[in-house]
Amino acid sequence: MVQIRMATLNDLENIVFLDSEVIGSKEREVELRKSIEENRCFLGQIEDQIAGFLVYHKYFFGQLFIDLVIVRPTLQRQGIAKALMEYVESVCLTNKIFSSTNKSNKKMQKVFNSLNYVRSGYIDNLDEGDEEIVFFKKISNCP
Image (cartoon, rainbow, N blue to C red):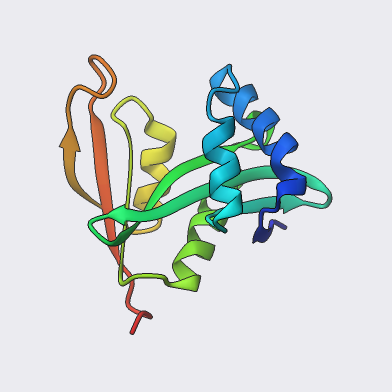
């Protein structure tokens, strides 16, 4: 079972390692540190192992935007991304949540679909030849 908690700076090294395992570099270390310092990073753990993490912000027209969901490659397709996203939905910071993924990222699109997110548009020119699909979900338990 996935346990979700707020990341702390003590987790930074492990988060950066996991991120680099997935993307092949440590280029996001400064951004990950900032998200932890600002309490915008949640960890998914299975026992004592970091299974994944999620980073969000509220700079997207004042709405919550899930910026990054990373799951340990050996633990993918076990509900970790879904658990992290459901947790963010449950803490309800805004009444709308947005996120995005590349058109080529079929795994993440399945996660969005399983959580009833709907396509809200797309952005060209971020990754050459691989448009970014924006997803949206209205959160009903928000005031």
